Every structure is written in structure tokens, then in C-alpha cells.
Length: 129
Picture 1 (cartoon, one colour):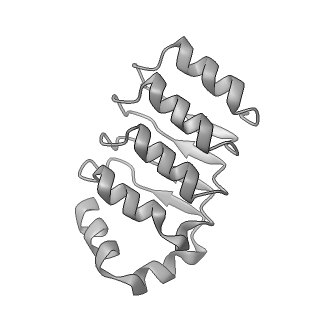
Picture 2 (cartoon, rainbow, N blue to C red; picture 1 turned 30 degrees about the horizontal axis):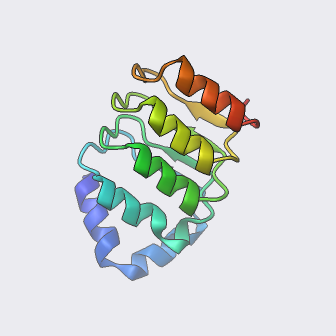
């Protein structure tokens, strides 16, 4: 399903124009969404109004994807990254450097994030609730 969505978005600029009003996107458990597909999705100018993204279970999300989010979604205040086993302290540093408006961040079952990554988030994401 997610692969189909990625292909549709890539193929249709008309469809992208309809995304201008979206403030929330949920891609939960889109295991086929690749880094390249993810970059294409968030780099669309139409998505600049996003304030909430849920990527729970999207196993291909990495530090580069998180940096893309921060660069392309400047109004983002809520990010759910539950059940993504590949998240690391390095991913958290990229997130903290680019998603500085975050107020809500969920990292349930992010077992590879250590105290170092959490300290980096706490130091740089001062608006976290």
C-alpha cells in the first residue's frame, strides 16, 4: 500500500497540489517506504504546513530521513517514531539540529537510543513537553 502511495505521489504533481491543506500525515508501518521515497514525499513544497507526522513502524527511517523532515517541514511540532529499531543517537542528533520546533516526540521501543541521544534531544529541543 505504501509503495503504491509513493509511486502515485512521484507520478502525479496534481496530487501533490491537493496536499497543501494537510497538517497531519500518518505512515504507520509503511515498511516499503524507502529513504528515496521518503525524501520525495517530504521535499514537496506542498507539505510545508505539516505539524504532525507519524512514522511508527517505518523500519527504513534513518537519520537522513529525520534531517529531511526538519528541512522540509518547518512547522512540525509533533513526531511519532515508535517501533523503529534502527534509530540511534546519531539519528537523534540530526533530528535535534533540524526539528527545533518539536513539542511532542514519541520514541517507544527505540532500543538503540542511549542516554547520550536523549541528553542531546533535551539540550537542543527546548520546547519538548
